[in-house]
Amino acid sequence: MKREAQVNRRGFLTGMAAGALVGPTILARRAGAQPALERLNIGVIGAGGRGGWLMDAFMGFPEVQVIAVADVDRGRVEGTANRANEKYGAGTCTAYTDFRELVARPDLDAVIVASPDHWHALHSIAALEAGKHVYCEKPLANSVYEGRAIARAVEESGKVFQVGSHERSTDSIRRACEIVRAGRLGRVRRVVINLPCDDGHHNEARAFQGVPEAQPVPPGFDYDMWLGHTPLAPYHERRCHFWWRFNLAYGGGEMTDRGAHVLDIAQWALGLDETSPSRIEAYGVQTPGSLYDTFWDYRFAMTYDNGVVFDGGTDGPRGLRFEGPEGTLFVAIHGGALTAQPSRLLSEVEGEDLGVDVGRTPNHQRNFLDAIAGNAQPFAPAEAGHRTAALCHLANIAMKVNRPLTYDPVTEVILGDSEANRLLTPTMRAPWTCRLPATSIREWLPLA
Image 1 (cartoon, rainbow, N blue to C red):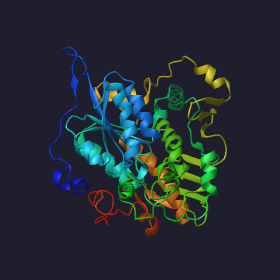
Image 2 (cartoon, rainbow, N blue to C red):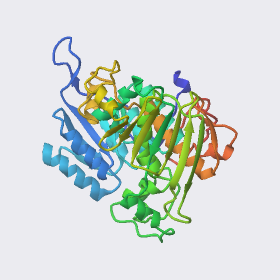
Image 3 (cartoon, rainbow, N blue to C red):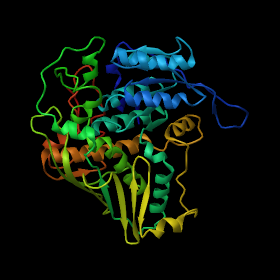
Image 4 (cartoon, helix red, strand yellow):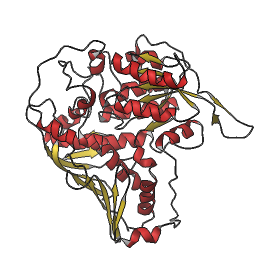
C-alpha cells in the first residue's frame, strides 16, 4: 500500500511524544537460534477486572515486566499498578490516567488493551503507531469500520497483534477444529450457535427500567475520556465499568461478549477467517426505553456464499454444534468440553493423527509472547478478529433495522439499505476520530 493512500490516524494522538519508538527488547541466546525474549516491557490499558486478570497472567512469565498501567479511573489504576510494584519493586510500574502517556514511552515493547469495547480501536491503533506489539481483548472493535481500521493498522505496522479470543488456544477446541477440518463429520453445512442470555448479570440488565438521572462524576474519574468518541451522555455508575456492555454505544451485549468466542470458533474451524456471510437475518427483543438497549431472546441465520449457515439464538447451552452427514460435534466454550453424535466419534479419533495439525500452546498469552519472539504465529490475528466481530455487529444491525441484510464480504458494504449501511460506522466525537482511505471500503470520509 502506498503511503499517500494510507490512513491518517495520528490526529487523535495530540500531545503524544513523536518519534519515541524503540524495538522490543529481544536478544538471541546463541548464533542461529530463533530470537528469545530476554525481557519484554508491557503496558496495560484498562485496569478493570479483565485488565487486572491479563496483567496477572502476563506477570506469570519470567521474561515479562509490567511497567505501566493506564485507566481513566485513578483509584483503579493506582491499585492495579501497585500489584505490579509489589512484584517488581516500588516505583517500577507507573500509573497513568491518559493512555497517550503510556503508549509514548520508548521503553515499552507491547501493550495489552483491555478497555471497554468502544475504546479498542483507538487504543490499539495508538499503540501500533507507536511501534508496540498489541494484545487486544475481544471483540476486536465496536463496529465494522473500526475493526477494519485496526486490521489496516496492523498490516502497516508489521507488529504482532493477538486478539483475546483465548478459546483458540484451548487444546480440546483445537482438537475439535482438527476433527472438522479432517472431514470426520463429512462436509459441514450448518453450525448451530447457542448464546443464552440467562446469567445473573443478563437478568439484572434486562430488568433495568428507564434511563437513570445523572449522578455527580466521582473524584478521580475522567468521564469525558471514558466516553471517548461516543456521544456526550450524563454520568451514571450503571453506564460505566462492567455494565457498559449492555449499551450499544459501548458494547454489543451477549452477541459481542460471548458471541465473539462462539462465532469465532465456527469461522476458524471452517476456514472462514478472511470472509463474511453474504446474507444475515436476525430478530431480537430490547427492553423499551432502557439505558441497556442490547438484544435479548434473539434468533439469527448467517449464510455464506459457499452455502454454510450459522443458525443461532439464545436457546441451549452456551457453545456451538457442527453438523455434517457423518455426525455432529458440540463444543462448549469456557472449558471446551466436546460431545459427539455418534458418541463413538471421539473415541475413534483419540490419539489419531488426523493429518491436520493446528498447533498447540500452553495458553493464549504464551502464544502472543512466542509470536513476538518469532517462534509462532498468533492464533487469533487481527483479520480473523475483525471478521468475527463483524459477524456480531451485522447480527445486531439486522435486529436493529428488523430486516434481512445483504452484505458484500469483499467491500464490506450492506447492499441496498442505506440505513443499515450507516450503522457499520460509528459516530465519532472529536477529537477521537479514526479514518480509513475513502476507497478502501466505501465513502466514509469525512467523519464527524
